[in-house]
Every structure is written in C-alpha cells, then in structure tokens.
Image (cartoon, rainbow, N blue to C red; front, side, top):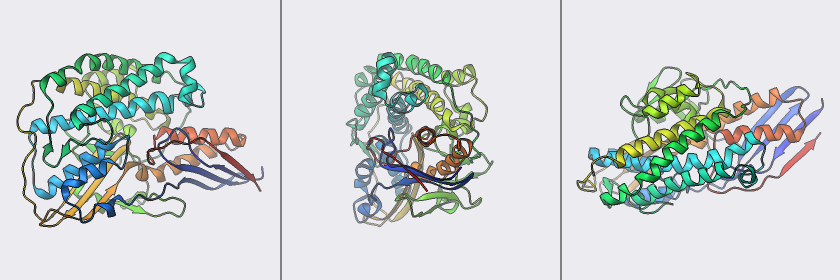
Length: 430
C-alpha cells in the first residue's frame, strides 16, 4: 500500500467550519488533524473594559445553539466575583432554562445531524423521506426547547432575560403551565427516541480516554459542582486553570486542551456525564438506561447519541418537575454593588463543560476574561480517536475511510460556530 493523503475540506452536519487531513505512509499513520479554520472571534478581548452587566448578552452571541450555557457560566462567575448568592427559586429557574437548551440542542443533533450516519443517508432531509415520523418528532422536541428558552430567556435565540443576580423578569404562572401538556408528550417521545437510537448498529470501538464532567452530590450536573474524572480525582472549579491547559497547534484556530497532571487529552460531554453521574439521572431516565442495557462505563464514542437521548429524557423530567411545582414567586434578581474581584464558574453545555473566569475592578468593569468552550477541549481527544478509526480501516477506499472519520467526528457534536457547509473531499495520492 503506497503513500496516501486524505483531505475532507469541510465537515458537514456540524456547527461551524472545519475539515480533516490524514496522511499515511504504507501501514503507518503519519498524521491525523482535525482542522478548525473558523476565524478567531475574539470575544474575550471584546469584553475587556465593558460593564459586567454586558457579559451575559455578549457571551450569548458566541453560539446560536448553546447561548444559555454561555450566559449561565458568565453570570455564575460574575456572581462569584461579586459574592452574590441567588435564591433557591432563581437557581431552579436557571436549571429549567438549561433544560430547554439541552432539549433543543440534543433533539436537533440526534435526529437531523447524527442519526443519518447510522441509517445510510447524506442528510436529515434525505432521511426524512423514509423516516418522516422520526424527523418530525425531532423537530417537535427542538421546538419545545426553543419555547422554554423563549419563555424564560426572553427569546429563543440569544436570550436577553438572564442577568447577574437572576432574571430581569419571571414569567407568570399560567405561562409556565401552558407548556406542561407539550412537555408531557415530549417526555414520552424522548423515551421512544432513545429506544430507537439504542437499536442502531454501532461500529465497535473502545476509546481510551479520561472522562471529565461536573459532578454534584444532589443533582445531575448542569450548572454547579466540582470537576470529576474517570481517573478518580476531583478538581474544584476554582482550580480549573491549574489542572487544564490550553495549547496552540498550527493546524487549528481553536486551542487544544490537556490535563497538566497527566499530559493527556480528555473527553467532555454527554458520554462523560452519563458515565460519571448515572445515579443522578431522574427516575425515568435512570430506569430507561437499565432497560436498554447501558453499560456501567461506555467507551464507544459512537454511542454518545444514546447518552444524549438519556439526557433529553432527564431534561424533560426535570423541566416537568419545575413546571408543575408551586409558582416560584419572589423577586426576580438579587441586588449587588460593584467590587473588585475574580470569579470562576463551569457549567455543562450540551457538548461538555464550559469554563468562564472574569477579573473585575471596583467600578464593575471587566478587566480580563477567559472563556474555554467544550469543543476546543475535546479537539485533541477527537484526533486521538480518529487515529484509531484510521488504523482499523486502512484497507478501505479513500471515500469510505473519509466517511467513517466524518461519522466519528459528528459523534462528538462539535460546535465550531453556528454554520454548516457542504462536503468537498480532495484526495491526493503520492
């Protein structure tokens, strides 16, 4: 077998602009690169010198798929710097808002971006011709998430109702109750979806990775907790930058991340969360995991789609528990006075742990900002896993090998930015 180069110019069915490059010399894999060429967007620099109140709205613009995650990490970090403690009612409403984001993001990914890979379709539109009920179900689930984000966030995309200390406005009781029938349907539909996904034919694969996510003793990780690893160690969020290191690589505009203590990459996201926090799932999600035979620790990244299914079931369960509860009442936000300080926070975006740090001055202006998104943290582990696929499939034709690599990348649901392009594959044989 001669020297081969395989280049996927643009990945499809992922959010943003990225490609793949593979170089093989005989039976040796010389290089595998996940190339992210999205231009840097410089949000951290944009925040410097601005009033801290601007941060939640500005960071929401980083992503149209997961703006809530950016807002939650932002307000939690700023509240830590200001020594603000929100009420239990506000805390629950923030989890409710996060449920909306998980529902819309997971619903979209499972049905339209990832399921086509297992069913032999190039796109969700093609799949809809033979699986119209499943696609329509996914669109309805996504709509539920958007409705919830719209209600609590002020609008479905880039919400504007989140602020430091709470919300600008709390919806009326009847506005919450109107969502209950749809969410009761959605819970059953999410369970049907997860059973459907569990029946897919998954490629065999074992990823030797370090699973990392937030963990909390009383709830499934979403917006609070400590960093937990499958290696058995625990890291306080305040020590995040002491343990996790970002490095620049020549082939990517996104930084890659490694653990300082091991020198190795790590994996964030639903597979890590389920593996590390399965017992914190709500009852029906936990029961469903047992029913479909979910492993105690699943190391097959292709099965992350099932983990998303379990999480969307959990999100519907938790959302209903809050929607049905007594109206939260109380004031919409806590007051505060500007003071100099540093605040750090990590929350669980749909794709994994999102970290924010802010240094603010005594006038309430942002002096420095640090934002570490999950996709850039996962990038190095994705490349490690791609090498496994290439090693197992070297005898395949270029088109088939490129397809298998693309399928694996989509399993991580990378959110490079907010756009999708059509695929162009260039193969150069030496």
